[in-house]
Length: 95
Length: 283
Image (cartoon, rainbow over all chains, first blue to last red):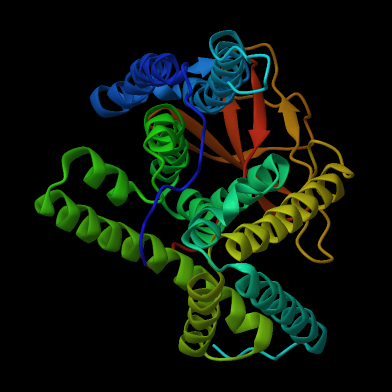
């Protein structure tokens, strides 16, 4: 089956910005995630230390899950804003 | 292991499979082009797509596999649950936007359009097949294990049946039916997870475990006298044995002729009743 273009998007001027933003946010997450993995590899006992009523593993682990959701919302908001700002609609409706 | 088939479970399963096949047939008739086959014609509502994605992630591998891994491997299993999410971050931040910009259906197509190399095409194909295979193994194991008690059929028949249905649906009707089937599955999982959570939380955050009709045993505490010796406040009870293990001090007290074991808490100056076994396990 011929694999033509999947979608017919108009030119998206914010595409570079969105791709760059994605990479930066990815590296931001990798640093936090890397910290979690490093502690687990180097000294896993640190994860067993108390943090309030639970231990660090639970707080850090669930924190990573919540952080991913928050980053996704921020990414979506920034990308939507960039699309509106950079793709100005002309009078005849074309972007 | 032999299981008895449960008629209602079979009826619901058959209804669900027929419904899914109907959706598949309905959308297969409409999928005439590559665009409608690979990307559902770009017409699926974002909310449906979102729940379909959730359905993808709440798969047998993650929903059953991670729970099983945590119960068997403990903390090591918990690490995997975090790893699942890291994969999603890669897809969202690194793959999604360039894929959309290149306007290709598959990751291999996107790489090919950028580099135009036979080697990359081949490698993308091989890695897709290898990853899919290892992803499908836990999915199929999950499906077979679930169908076995549900329908009372052998494990291999469950794997074969579910595998055939899934391959048939995806291969014949493409992304539209796959998305709607995942939407249905994701929706049902979310609804029943919420129902289960409510039913469990109805009993409160913390409950006492029960073993059939045997009531839960409330563990007691016994006060000691202020002297620095193991002397009970209650003079009607006497300590018959004392064991000093590494950091633990355990004592045996017979109450009404029944043996009980207590742990000495130096900080609180009390004895805490403990759970104990009278015979060692084989290992």
